[in-house]
Length: 184
Length: 356
Image (cartoon, rainbow over all chains, first blue to last red; front, side):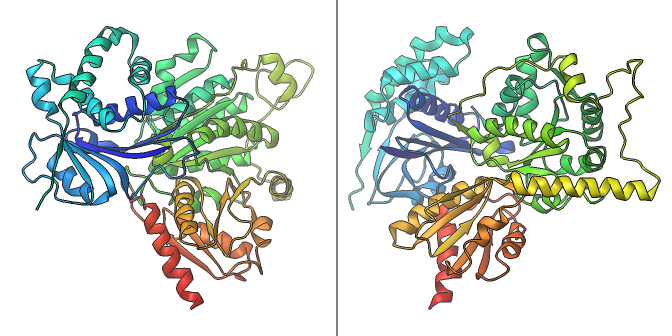
């Protein structure tokens, strides 16, 4: 098993922490993991992205030119990373703020309105967990149990009371993700 | 854990006595992690944010003069400021660990990853005929391992050691096994193992003097000869490297650190396309694995040196093979990190084209 994933969006959307939780979840299942972020001024308001690799074997490059899964949270990231999804790969995007949806026909595109759902639930901070839930529904690369263990490990203890809320958000994401058919 | 965080944890666990530094991206997590861990409350290790990089390296000089296990870290522009101190430590034969998480230059440059400080590190960024043992980790695990190895080599040879890494390895997270906790050396142990240390003079011996100054040229030449003998001994005994897919290789990529990781993937892709290429990764940049590379003369059609710079290590590769193997370079500059397919494209364009 090997999953090469890019998560990209605005700084502050929880892109890096979503990647971190995914990496920690992989660690819980004894997988090899790598997490390589864009860093520096990009993290603060610009576009942020992180490459996460989960694998059963030793990982070579933490830097990649194409991905099995792209999780896209804003328009600039869609333009940058849609061409870099492997043929037959998966692109997941949040519909919020996307004016030009993905066009490729050789990949599978899925829409998850996580921002709207997070606002509805009155919990905007759980936005990235909703998206993560959507990903796990499509590609169960790690179990929900491992994600919760990974979350526990990456969150400081004073925040452990937030774990049930995060689990709820993941389940919500699993529920609302939808395939977008590119007919034409 | 991030590569930078691992450096901090490994230093505490390996019984370091002191860290002196000044923050700079992309390595600030080293001191941040040390400050979070508060080792002064547990092992007694001192962590101090100095007023500048120059102050920090001279604090390291002072700590090392007392036989203590001390270190500093910075990134390229900050490492330039430390060069005077490094030369003085080489001249005074002091053990210390210096970490450079390289970023793009010259000048203030960029905060993104680079390997453009290769020349500065292995050819002597400071003045005088000195050499610094240089370790190039290519994984988060090696960041931990090289802290331990770096301190061991520094004390084995009384010489500064540098961990030369970059923003990719410093910022990325991977699985890591940290070294076991070992206690810091006691003052009695240091007096015994480092009899030259300036820890206070007992009545029964002359004062210890730590200096790089010697105004009598006859003695200064003897000092230099002693250094050169030591460097020769290091070159003979401490070379480290890794070979991957090299047994049947017609082509070789030579790369260190993050460039080696990216090249490793390029090798996987090339092999899928039937190109017989292997990866040779120097782990010590000085001493450089010259003999090991020279052994490939007569066996290869070409070498591609991949670096995040304009072509620095390629000079040492060409010297090692005495230009008997066609050697080309591929690099990206100014903080751009190449992707594996760019490396593969370069490999095909520069080496395969030559064959036809």
